[in-house]
Length: 549
Image (cartoon, rainbow, N blue to C red; front, side, top):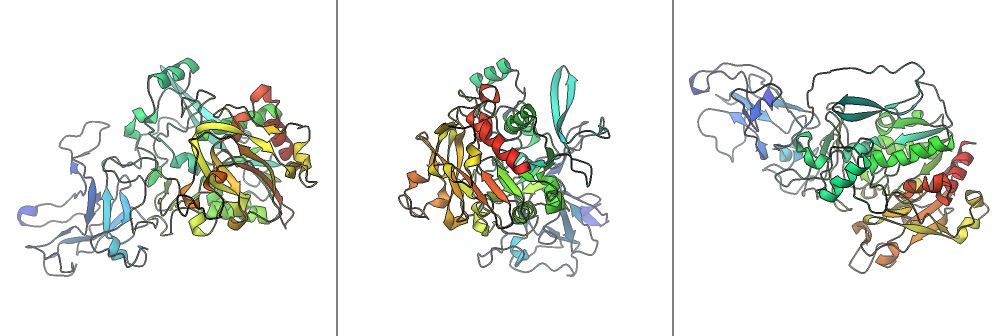
């Protein structure tokens, strides 16, 4: 952090043209190197410049005699500004997203929402591996040609090695070029951006080389900062993710797992399974992103006959979730084609663009746990954690919600009697098989890795039809912790092992809309099997052609 003002004083302080907290200015920084060194991993609260020795038990008074500067970190917590309440207004700017809305020395546990007692949260936690903006110069710009079709594209960079930087093209404002729209889960891509999994070994590198897959891995490039599934070097959880840095995981051909049964793709690369299938089937589709939906709301969806998700739309702001719910309630059709969707609540702030924040509060499957008293986002002041803990289980929107997780392996669905219901029999037109999706590029099966199920107590509509249910999952699959009351009892009374299942669900809404949900992250990985001629492919084609009619 640096200050933005200047002041002169006598004595040992000399000139205060630049003040830095959390680091030391580098003596002679080299070109393209950080101008700072000796970074702090820890919290700072109420830094001040005053004469003599201050009694820590006494309140700091900015108008006290001799008080030269007093930076009150409890002010403007939603921004990257810090305010000096002293006479010289030496206000500062935070660099690289140190964590705000963390407990300070005054926190007693009496209040857990920082908005109610901001002075209890007058600390900022600095980390040497924080990163907001690489600050690189612009080398070139890409102009989108007029009339370029909506879709996902990439800028190919060559210079010995090759990199492809993806970008999305939306239809022109007020223009719809297809009856269907794909909402790319870019918030989830960003939240997972640069996940350092620690799973890159010699066999992994050999597979990448043999396949000609994306060369670089986030594990090998910590300089681009980690994902919110990692921890900082001091052990605290990474709660911010910035898009103003290279996101290596958001590249075509980026392999996440050395998957012996498939491709090992997740997130952006995994969703190319769906984009490829739509292209092969000649199904026209427009593309928008979570970021667009958060900015423009349900108006962006209203012109379309149906909306489809990717394989893992896990992270949502109130605006994106409201837009999808409003769309369905007003008669829209939703095809939820993944698993573990609509799970975590996240925050954004116009004061710090291109950043998302997550607080891993209370429960859920999570890579780290938020500290007591730190469950509220800094960016918007709202309670974080699971959407289920915020009163909006995924079942309310799409009929199914996260139930179980295992390693990156897939099984299959078994067709249920509900598939013959007159309201849904059309979904199985041309499908005589009882077993659905016992194949695929994602873990070897259409029902795998993270599984969602229906639950009336959590909001699955009473008219929902369960068309198929997964079975025969590997022994490493476990029930998500929010379902467990004890080691043998669950919230809904079923046995824990019974909750290890994915369910394909269909229901119609009061507003003449409809929802089709697959309940599995690996579903889209099965679409291309047997040259796109298989029961998973046929099922989805039946749904989308009906939805767009």
